[in-house]
Length: 295
Image (tube, rainbow, N blue to C red; front, side, top):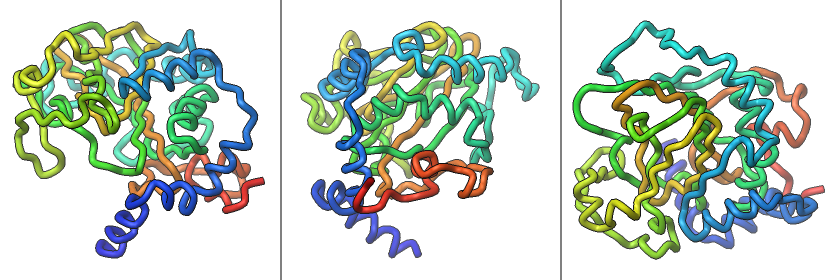
């Protein structure tokens, strides 16, 4: 199974033409036949993602996400219900679990699939996307130095395109663990070929701040501080890092989008049976594939 999966992944990623017009023909045609409805904010985000690899927006600027955001914020307690407090030894807490089992109406999935967020993802991929992952993180101060995803890295390829969205559920200042990105390091970007000194890792190489600063001055880094409702879209094939919280708590929803040909398996489960989901919703949640000839 492992060898077969590896071969299939190589075939899917070997050619843009094969990826789009073979494995993703239905989603590509569905996207192209959908009436153009991108708002000026969605268009701005797509331009910035193309040139910088990262773009910041807000719930106020993408109002279709507001109802789900408000519902999710209302269900997440401000206090740490795990009983862990102070300096943490274990890292971020996944409030939905490692493999969430959710109703399609759960606010985390509803926010991930808010029309304007999907419009950004569809426009970035150039096809109708699916939800790959949906994680709700609570991050508190940890002992020691930044490690793992808190260091600069590129995500391992999970598709021909890579897009994640981070929605802050509380205010995130400089000490609150803001998401960081090096603009221009995405594929096709002006800094894509930089090669900072990295620490070997069994997963992906990690780069500390000093090594990154030797390649890209700190003033060129994008550190996404912002109030509750800040939304950060990032092509995570570029250099980025998760938040290292020094003070307070950070609450954030991470939304990961992909094509139906993504070689990363879905990291959540929907509790409803297939016949309870319409064709569009079933596709977005990874329960169905779009046919080669989309209607």
